[in-house]
Image 1 (spheres, rainbow, N blue to C red):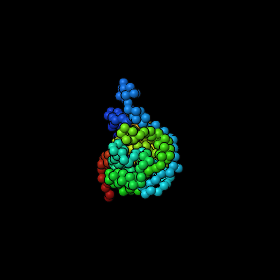
Image 2: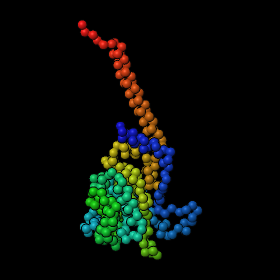
Image 3: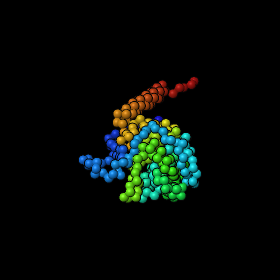
Length: 293
């Protein structure tokens, strides 16, 4: 009951203040109002996420782990939901921010790596090697040092055919920008179900722990998380345009109504029982002591 009322409070307390305070990009670069398409840098016109929610990632795709072993991607799926990042390990800025942002969000969750989730990072730069993957993983583990994180975090590399197959299936669009000698790419993470279906896209370089937790609970079909998470999912709904969970006001109000009825019912029952006890005490006192002759 305590968990139920905690969830009710979480839903209702935010009704007045929880308008989506931050938004993420939709399908790629977002232009300012009135900006002509030709004014956007060419590289930025071609990048973004196509949200292929419900599609399955080709898990038979060969990849290389940090030790240089060639394995199928399926090795990291099957039991737990997976948080997937596409990054390249020589990226001077954005990829590191995405990886660090995920590590920071995971660090405050009670979900345990290796028990409740797996983390998979795949480089889309075919020049990356197991050695560069190992270096990047070491930096990530400095931020996310929870027990089990090392075994549950996988930094992978792949050949061009595998990279193309995986990024296309996931809807991750990126291009090589020749003037800067860098990849132009969107920022975000993807949460997948244990059987490899694309479930949720979270945009940007910072991820709200609530959004990440609810995405993992949904992807696991409720197998991870608590009953409170399940109740919160009744109040919060994933918005694919923002890549975040927003409060569904009507549902929250219904939950608040249920909570009010339960509170009133509990109060009435407690008061009736208390009155009965007091009445019994008054009758005993009125009868006076029993005298034996």
